[in-house]
Amino acid sequence: MARRRKARKAKLGSGKRFKSLSRKLAKRGARNPKALAAYIGRKKYGKKKMAKMSAAGRKRKSRSRKRRK
Image (tube, rainbow, N blue to C red):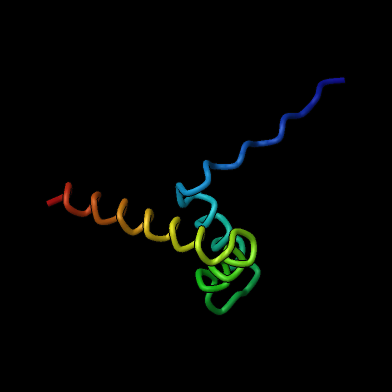
C-alpha cells in the first residue's frame, strides 16, 4: 500500500499562507476575509510576530512595484 505525502506548507513569512487562508475564508462567506485572516494570525503568532511578517510583506510588495517601472 503506497503512502500519500502531505503537501508542504509555504514558508512562514512568504505571504502565501496568508493568501491561501484568506481565499479559503472568502469561499466560506467571510465579509472581510483578509481582516479575518489577520485576526487568526495574530491569535496564532502574536501581535509582534504578525506585525513583523506584515511589514516584510509590505516591503516585498513595494520592491516589486519599483522594478516594474
